[in-house]
Image 1 (cartoon, rainbow, N blue to C red):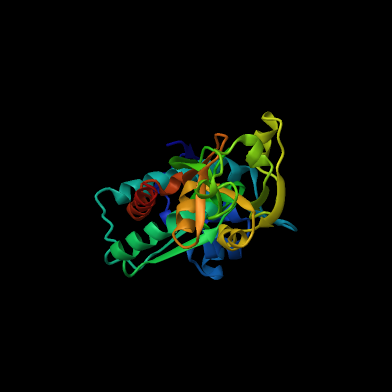
Image 2 (tube, rainbow, N blue to C red; image 1 turned 60 degrees about the vertical axis):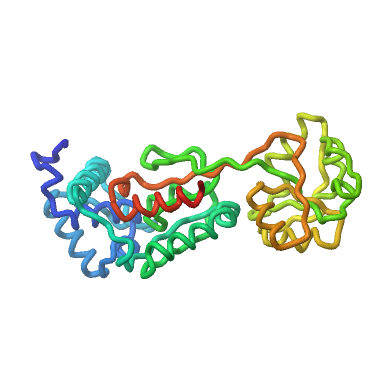
Length: 308
């Protein structure tokens, strides 16, 4: 471990290191205090001790917040590494008992990931950890790294791309898209509908699920390769709206197969193969500082089991 001014950072009080790490991430005393469960006076006291310890102001007040000095930016990666090493050493041999835990576990989830996983995850969580709390928060994949860095969530579960080196990831599952329509729709097999071609698919009126309100997606870009365009007649924010939208209309929707299975269990909906190859990819991500924490490792394992 590299030292600063001849000091092995691992010898510094872990709580002080966490205070520095929180200040560096949040750039505000109040938010940093909340992040690690300290009062604001306690965080201010910790900052004073850190300034004495490193013989530097470390953070300077500006209109935009607490800006780190050059010395603080130099120290920051060493502090993060030291926290990981100290916590890994403390966790060696330490167990986690979900049956007696009253902890709160927070997953940021994309809308589809939540629909696909919540049933199995909630059941296994409540059975294994009856006194703990599971929080599922709405997440857009582009926000995952920032929320994991701040500690706002323990894991991110969504379609994830372009994450920084401090974020670890694993693929949970891939799910092919299928077409859903009301039973009795002209394209469904029970009334003699032929196998769905790309042209027949594109000619239908479509429901698009778009939590962020975008009126095109990956499927539209794929259809262009076939020389086709589809008409989006209805745009909805969640998959929950799809069954009602299809029930009394000739609209169709394109959803991951897990969603189609859930919809068909509660509504008179038929599922057909999508005539182009498209899959939903869902990954799980977490900050590397939590990799060795037994409670977080248990939580990640539970999510992997739920996705199986």
